[in-house]
Amino acid sequence: MIHLAFLRGVNVGGKTILMADLRDMFGKIGYDTARTLLQSGNVVFHVTGRMSTAALEATLEGETLKRLKIETRYLVRTAAEWDDVIARNPFPDAAKSDPARLVVMPLRDAPTRAHLSALRAAIVGRETVDIIGRTAYLIYPDGQGESKLTLKVIEKHLATTGTARNWNTALKMQALAMQMG
Image 1 (spheres, rainbow, N blue to C red):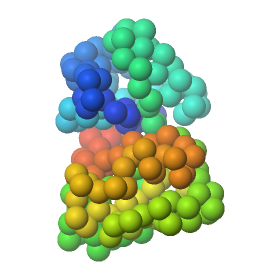
Image 2: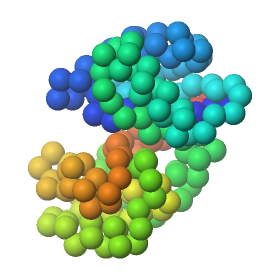
Image 3: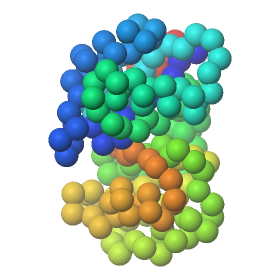
Image 4: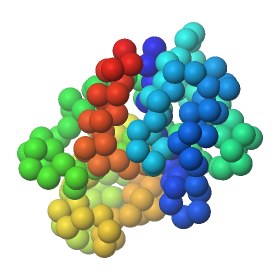
């Protein structure tokens, strides 16, 4: 089965992982088909056997700490789950008109409606957010660089961990998963 892994917070703020080293680590732990995309910790790989997403995330986090000496979180989805993330995008117009400012955020846990309401109340700019299951979708009409809607704010109000990718990257990960399938 094909899985997609998104590393949280690598190659920013001093947590540097070379993608060649990441692929090598995946190979050494039995995922020798791993392919990476860009430099921000995006991996597509085959998993044989049955392992829950939570167990897979924990294994990858432990191996990354042990082998690469980097503490990070992984957000893992199956290719079918990622296809669903793409298909259920609540902002199709933004996906077409400004995909670099549409952000998809895999989350560790599904937030409640109360969490979503709290996050929406915390927005001080023109950003828009919606959540479907374990995925947040955000529009940053003025870009993410100066936005007050940071990952820290999002995680605080949603009470879970996540990592953000723009829509272009989300689609490239889907395409890479399809190539590997």
